[in-house]
Length: 344
Image 1 (cartoon, one colour):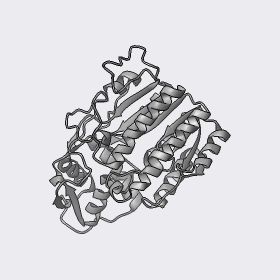
Image 2 (tube, one colour; image 1 turned 135 degrees about the horizontal axis):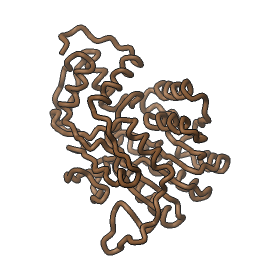
Image 3 (cartoon, rainbow, N blue to C red; image 1 turned 90 degrees about the vertical axis):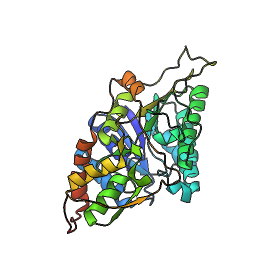
Image 4 (spheres, rainbow, N blue to C red; image 1 turned 60 degrees about the horizontal axis):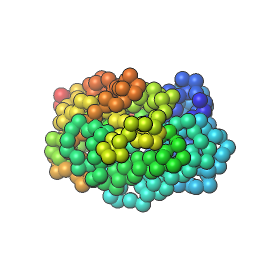
C-alpha cells in the first residue's frame, strides 16, 4: 500500500517506516524536525533507516501548516495514514501549552481533513495511556471512562479520539486509535526515563526518582508497538451494527472507529525498573527521591485483550530483555564512559 507516516523521524515513526519499507509498502513521511529535543537524533534515526532499506520520501512539514498538509495529500493520495506526529511529553505541556494545541489539535484536524478530501482505507493514529488520567482502576480497559485527564497532553489525546470519531461518523473514515503505554527501546526519546536514567547512571550523576520510585509503569518495547501497527494496517474497523446507544461501548461505535490499548500488561515499580537498568549498565545509580510531579499518574497497566482479539498478537517482550537491547544501543550511540565508582 501507499502509506503516509507522520512524525517519521520520531522514535516510533522511524521504527514504523523501517518495518513498512521492509514489508514492501510504498512509504512517504513527514516531520517538522522541531527542537523539543536535539534534532540531530531525528536526523540520525532517518539515516539509520536509510542505511538498512535505502532512501525514502521525507518532507519537512509542520502538522499545523494547513496548506502544506493539504498539498501533500492532494499530491500523494495515500491509501493508509499512520499518524504518529505530535507534540509529546506530559511535563512540557505545563510549560508550553500552545505547542500542544498547534500540533495535537490543529495538526490532527489537518490530517483528518486530508483523509476526508482524499479518502483513505485506514487512518491509524497515536493516542496515549495518559488519557486514563484520574482513573485508578487497573488494568486499564478501552471500555473504561477517560473523562478526567491530568495534563493538557492527555486532554489533547482524548480530544484526538473524539475528533476521529466525528470524522469517522460523518465521512466514513475508518479510524483506529492506539493508546500506547510507556514505549521504550533503541532510538528512544531523550526526555523519557530510559535515556535520562541510563545517562545519569553512566555519568555517575544524581537521578531524580519521582513519587519516591513507588509508582508503576506498563513498559512496552518498541518492536511490540510496531508489530501491532503492522498487523492493524489491513484490519480497518467496521461499523458495529449492534452498538447500543442506551449502553454505549466507549471502545467501539456505529461508525467505523475503534480504540486499542498497546501495552506490555506487566506493570513494574520504578525502583525495580531502575534495578534492571543498573544490572545492564553494570553500576549503581545515585538516586534523589522526590514527590509525584503534577500531571503524572500513579500506575499504568494495559488490558490489551481487544488488540489480541483483532490481530492475534499482544506485546510479549519482557522488560529485562528489552532493556538489554536498549542498553546495547545506548552504549553505542552515546559512547558514554562509565564513571569511576563502585559497580553493582
